[in-house]
Length: 515
Image 1 (cartoon, one colour):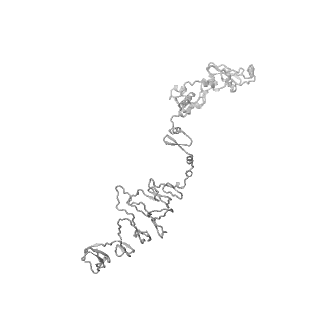
Image 2 (cartoon, one colour):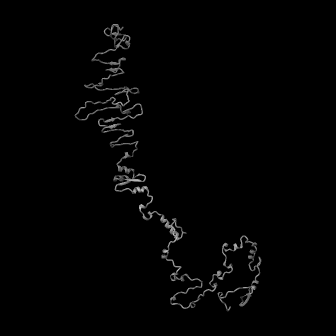
Image 3 (spheres, rainbow, N blue to C red):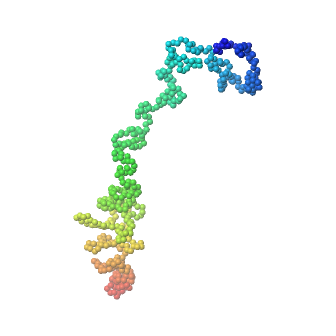
């Protein structure tokens, strides 16, 4: 067409009716066609023939029931707030063409864009070397956007600067909340929370001073209150209380021992230190000043017990006795023993076994001891108030041959050889001497049933007094052969009589029988 113009340059139609003409080009010939003619070219569509709509769309439309939208009012359905999904812009009436095309050319009254450098006009000296950008796409390239430094600042909308941001007053700041800052908080709210957390901290957080510590632990206060110095160590005197004590270099070396073995080495202890209290074995060495059972009764056993000085059992050893045994005998039985020797004789004692032996020696010096006593049985020294003793024996021998295998049993065996000043039996006391058994002198055999059997001459330094009887009380002569008696009321008067084994006859006249 000779008068072709860009669509954008054509004036818009004011209104269109069915009688307006429309122009079209057919085989190079301009022709006119009314809108009514154009509409008549198209018939109404059916479900079988396409028309103003396709037969498929007609079939869909026929399938829509009458009143299909009756579940909501028209006002509700027309309210775009209730619409979901998207709608193609081309289906919306009343939109400008550019709304669907997005083309620069479909803009109404668009600015003229130069199509060549000749259309730009005069170029200023400042523009020399500047490449003219192509704005045909409707956008200014970001590379050609001016810097904000070249844009003047207004009086109301001003640029943000670091100084202006820092100078902004925190109007409305609230520090009442001390919770953690959240990603959704505003800057002002975040500042308020941070300040709330800081305000909630103890003064200690700002000063770092011990005095600003609130609830001080009692143990820390106790330690902090101690005065320290060289060779002082701390220890607890109670709950929350402490004190110090002197810790010498030896104490430090002992406390620093790696284990119990190292500690014993530091203390100079041997293997005895590791033994149990109930089974202590001492091999060699010397133990001085040791008390066994001093406060609690205890038994002490030793294979060989030897002392180079004095010893005490139950009492202090003293200075006048090599072995001093004393104290109160602790026993629950009815028989008590001050010293009890209960030995077992071993099989190698084929010659002699001495259960108790007293061997006396004297010191090599010029001196005289008036009396040496091998065994001395004192009488009762003190009777406690209210106590009494029925029988007191200085020495009692109770050897017996009741057990098979014992040949002879001697209560007392005296073996001193005859010599000047030697006495096997020396009873210097004036108390009576009582012998329940017979006495045999010079023989081990008893003469009959005699209580006194003498083998050898007997010498009496004083008168011999015969037992006195009456005629009615004389013993049987047959049982007392060769015995003498005194009969106080014999027919011949008081006389001495002797038994001939049958009768009692007068000693002076053996033919006169007692009558």
